Length: 298
Image (cartoon, rainbow, N blue to C red):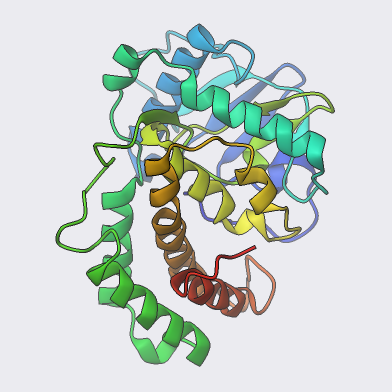
């Protein structure tokens, strides 16, 4: 899950939504990672691009520096091909776009042969890490700093998390044994999916790894990009995935966990440099309450 750090002003294309330093050339993209994050993000993205080039060529960028020097003197970087198309985020998405998007997501999920997928580590930010992230936020956040609707929703979400949710003592820490593993892109931001009028391609794999379909779909439909700046029909999107009974049972809990996580991220938006429109946290609180009540959310 990547949080939005949208700079002021109206930059166009992918640069509007990315969280890294991207240099766009006509035929390639240079992505510079934050040194403070360590080697993990670049290593995960490099692994994903290598695997997808072998098993789903054309879906993702191609590495243009497949054998980088063993040491770097500057920020960690990747050089990759530049894909055609514009980000789905902020566009009106009709049936054609949603179907093409679903095909791209499904291709990522099923690209790797089972034996190769089994060797891939669990994606960054999967269930256990997300539960720990929410609990760490709770430990350092005074309730009085939250607005009343956010405070009430957070209390309800944390109670669910610790009793019947993925943080309960008997909850499986990772992928449940009855749920098939998939390869997950790891970031639900619709800005990472590029539409060229015919096909959707995928960028940004820094949190990628072994995952499960319910968690990855929840990552997409509960990402703030599903509603800001323009909502898309998440119900119609999810209908395009034939889930197993175990996946369908797991999906609501994954959505609730990620909705709670987004509420913790949005609760302290800096009013002097807001990343999202005013009232976004309160709207997210309402969304979480609907999910907790079992009413679903659009």
